[in-house]
Amino acid sequence: MAPGLVVACAAQCKGLSPMHKGLHAKNRIPTRSGLASSCCLAKPSLRAAVALGTVASLCGHWSRRRVGCWGIWRRCSRTVVQRKAGREDTPDKIVQGLLQSCVIGTVSGVGIAIFFAAVSIGTHNFVESEKYAWAAPVLGGALVTASYYLFGGESNLDGTSLPALKTLDTERVTNSSGLSVEERGKRAAVRSTLAAITLGTGNSLGPEGPCVELATNVAAYFCRFGEKPINAGILASACAAGVAAGFNAPLAGIIFAAEVIKPGQRDDAITSVVMHLLAATCAASMVQIFGLTPPFTGVLFEDFRNSSLAFAQVPLFAILGAFCGVLSATFDVVRNKSGTLWQALPIPRNTHPLVASALLSAVVYFCNMPLLMYSGFGNVNEVLMHAGDLGLMQLAMLCVFKIVLSGISLTAGLLGGVFIPALVIGASGGALYGQVLSILATGAGFSGLVSPPVDFAGAGAAACLASLCGVPVTAIVLLLEVNGGANYSIVLPLIAAVALSTFFDNYLLNFVLGAEDAAKPSIERVSSEALFETVDANRDGVVSKEEFEAWLAALASSAATDYQQKERDIAAPDQVSVATEASPPKRW
Image 1 (tube, rainbow, N blue to C red):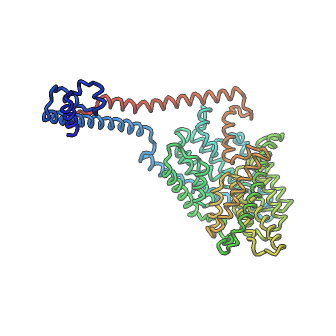
Image 2: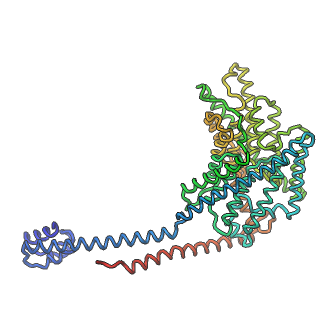
Image 3: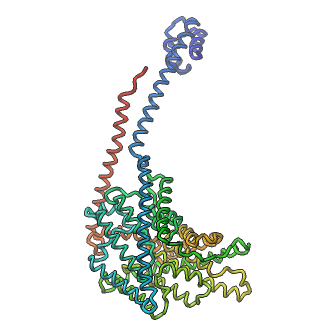
């Protein structure tokens, strides 16, 4: 009743009607819908003014309430319609994504277990042979070369790697006759077979690349990548499954997926993490069912919690990280120079695997260095367990030859990854560094204050892996996990070594050697190469002006089509909201 009393008192005391004051009176007295009715009385009485003012105020309050509620309902309905039209994380799709992660992890785990079984058969029959082990790489290179000639060249097996899958949308835009899902699956099967041949005959590469490629192609086949939009969460789950099964390290697989695959803008963070967990768990469970165990179980590091002086050695591990950064930068430069050298050689591209494997066999035969050959995780395990027993010259030669031969093999067309070469390079370099420190400490009378070489070997392995592959957190977690979690107190020196190695690798490549392309993480670099191959339509190694203009025109056309589709999607909820505004609910 307060508004009515205000109107009544104002009219009664001043003897004037607010109607006579016009806008001036309206500004002085709060606007109410009952104001005009009260002002209609030229000589208002107190009782009549109170009654009219009260009724008018209640009517105004009810009118504002109805209009306000309708406005809020109208805005909320428009927002709900628009959000519902743009959301992808509906309950059905979330459950579908979780089930797909489980299926991808299970199938990938079974496939990787079969892959390792095939590799172990070759290792047992060829690499572990007493007389002719040195000739095994030549056999593998010859089979890979023959396969390339059979399939018409290495380029006819492209399009299945992780970088190629990440740029699949771009390839579909620039190449209307892109690979079908079935064709990509066949190529992935052939490449996995060739990778098993490469590793089973002891060539100087690793299995994690083929494992991740196998898992991502399983995801591409089940989710029909190329026919449907790529789901970054599913692709990351496949990466987690590949590393988890390849190293029997599910936690490292999850971290690897987070570091390598950038989540989509509409991907829910919690759902993506759950998908990674499920895929990694299923994949690791499959390889454990088939009898694979963590590769480095039995390697014991020093317990840094037993002595307060142990953590004073963290600067020594930081210096080791700088040394590993130099080794990683050297590997990157050798890999780039090897690619240039292969292009300059006047021999067919298909024969490069045979030449690279023959070079490895010659070094193994004449230098008597079987540790250069791949034989599962045994080489890395042997370097770690005998870090203090191997000679300085043997460790130095192992480190140098592994850098050169792995870089040559990787660019020659042999199929494999760089995780194992990075671990061998870092472990041998770390063992060499630890032995030199032990010699210096013994000469200075501080032999009991320096950690054993095995600690430096383990930290060096993680440091080189981090800097070579651009996955520092994965390197730390992987070393701790594949060791069976024997001792986590080495994690602080490990972090120092990994951080300095990553920094020095990028610093040297960017500001000292001027090799900016080599400074990129391996996956990002290969992704750029895949994009270059996409633009290079005639595969002559040179992007002409016409090829670039054709690629740009196709990209612009696809962008215009996507924009028009988005405009139609946005217009649909607006039409719904306009129709809703045109027919408001009935007022009571």
